[in-house]
Amino acid sequence: MEKRIRIATAAVAGFVALNAVVGGIGFLGGGIDMGPAITSRFPWHSPVVAGSALLVAVAAPMISVVFLALRRDRRWSGASMAAGLALICWIVLQLLVIRTYSWLQPASVAAGLAVFAGGRWGRKAPDVPGDRGLSPASPDRRPHEA
Image (cartoon, rainbow, N blue to C red):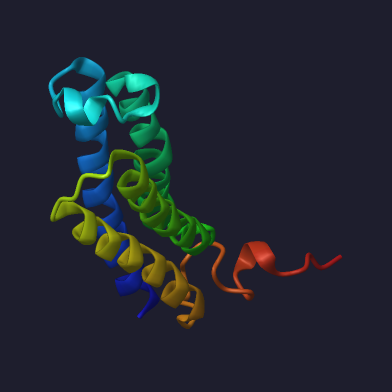
């Protein structure tokens, strides 16, 4: 069960990360132009700042979820919950700062909730033998005998 949750969460986080990277690079490179009315609402009226913030606040946490989940690192569930909350906070701040609405915002909140829930459920899922760091009885967690 835990494996399915981990893989599904990594897939959603990967999709969000890909979109955030494309959006961040689009802002940084000038490929995305929101128009002067919206750009004037960006911090310092700068798409570069907006793109950089998108990469740092959304893409990086989601990428970390993907890598930790696929490596079967026990920290994946905590990283997933943090990344899901970061995405939700990003959308709330976006609505407050830019004051522009899009169908992508509720879709992003849903994705953030899914990533958060995946991490939460992954934390509660039974341990799977062979997953690194998940089982208290795994060989690297057993006390060394003298």
